[in-house]
Image (cartoon, rainbow, N blue to C red):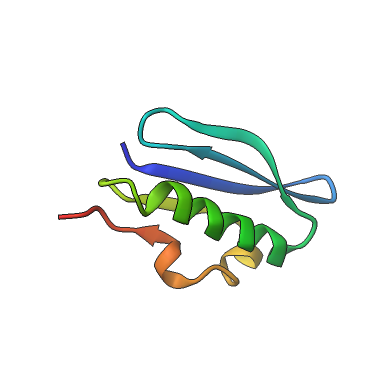
Length: 80
């Protein structure tokens, strides 16, 4: 199963949910108060969960967050 990272706005800040390869992950992780802070959290989670996953992973986030996430961490391809 591909990793999925979801960043969303809640109240004054951003929150992250993640689902890993073996059902691991978290829900409701504080991702920061600004879009930049949320992008840093998103990138960290993609490196932690999606890069080591043989099936890769995807990031879903608001546009203001995605613009700060490096392109190669927005969608990690499956390993051949």
